[in-house]
Image (cartoon, rainbow, N blue to C red):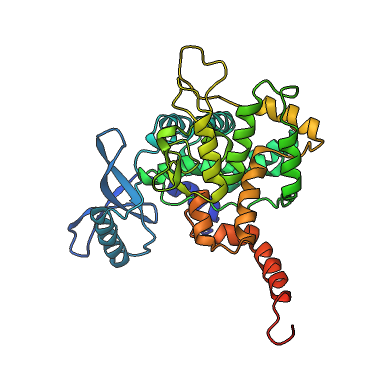
Length: 388
């Protein structure tokens, strides 16, 4: 009688294991090993796991062990990890679209600026469309790359596509905090062209800009002239400056505080000490202060309400066109302030505190360090130790 060949291919063995039933495991004395199961050739340990909705359920977790001794040791290690809270929860995994809504309703997003919130909401909506029904633990690099390639194909810049990925990481970071995933997908960043370096505003150009502020170019000439000088002498950002009140100006201790209402970029207030020119500006503005407003830059259309100006960009457009300086933006005056401070020889930590940086001057040195070097070289050439 011909003997039947009982060898099976790997695929056949895998298929047989997949559909086999779970069987209890017994030791060599025919005693059942608690919590240990076997299906085909694979061992499993049974634990109660959190389903994510306040309940728990028994779940069989696959082990790498190939024999009973290894299976017992690995099962005990898995139980220890569960007790210590270090076990990757094999239980409930929400879908991305469901957890994305949880992120959008979280305090983490609510603490961000309104513009940032809106941008993140739009990005999250795009991600939900791309992979809404996928479980959080199934969000993989290939899925992310396909979304990014789709965005690039639509004409988005690498920077815009990168921001979308950053928003996704924000969602996944919260998922990791909630215990839904153990680690974030590792994404290779896109190569981006460095932003075009903007020229620094010179003193002559700033004077030229101020000279163009007339009643013919803008209805709010006096207010706008004060505003430009305030930006250049404090390094304040556009929106920050508009929210400064007279209660933020301390003439006795010679400083002005910016961001007291939390509108600063990092939500922290900072004080800028008076230079002679800034003090002179504050005194001049106090003399011209409208008696019915607490704001340094009150809205010209405030009526009976005391509110600050929302924006002065229309005035800027008209003034810089008249000055033939179309490239100057409000933020360039922040750079003007920082570069002037660097060339005056001030230490980077002080400049950083005035700008509202929390890195102790690292960014100032990185962006403006070359100015300090050139300034030092120029100063060194003026030295004469022995030659008159």
